Length: 336
Image (tube, rainbow, N blue to C red; front, side, top):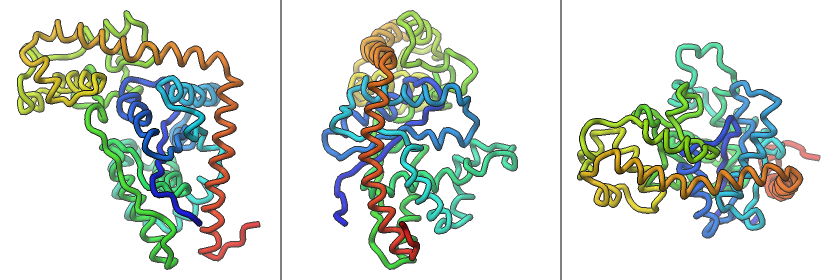
């Protein structure tokens, strides 16, 4: 088996409409990575159902993520775009990893604790074992790198632990110790109503987030109502870090402008929020509105999207089955 040396796997959940945080934290980075890596980008619909999803909308939301990939600039001919649930090798390897992973490792996952809260006994087993499926998603393609946000770093560390334990247990070097790719500006976009909380579809306030399909007027209104403090914009990084709402808006501006946050502070420091918000709204409209419009056009051609997903699925299965055959051979299972 020839191992890849420069391969990426990453995915996006189809658990609702995409917002600015999804774009800046993931998809925008995928667009740049496709020029340097062999890329597998999937819709992680199996991860989505760790919490209840409406079956009437799940397939539609899956297509929307594929449409968003393409509308944002990901080339479907160059990259492998597919739905996780259509490649059964993901779940087959996940079960094997369940038998390798130690319970204590999963108990230490802070994201599970955050999501389960006080209702830990009533959440799904899938939510608890989510990280082993994530490890299988990555390692079934022998991915060497994964772009991750700060909130996923612990899961990738677990993926490396699982790979190392499997390799040690079975005296093989099959699985790579996948390296994280952590990007700078915009990797963690915060709520427009609370700069200490991540932008989320589950927030009850519509004004907490910019959706990719928002109209011009909606974007203007949401930025206008974004929470700020009474002072002008900070003039240095130290001050910006101490003012989370100001820092969040500056980070969004920086990411959309492809500059550093320090540069954004240099350009806008001391400006009144009213003027800055107008500039920021104009920038978001310029960058996001064309993507939203293209997604709508692509969603009108479901045959095209299904063709892209089917081609991606077939390519992914070939790669994944090669690795799974090797895993079965290593651990002594017969695969017909």
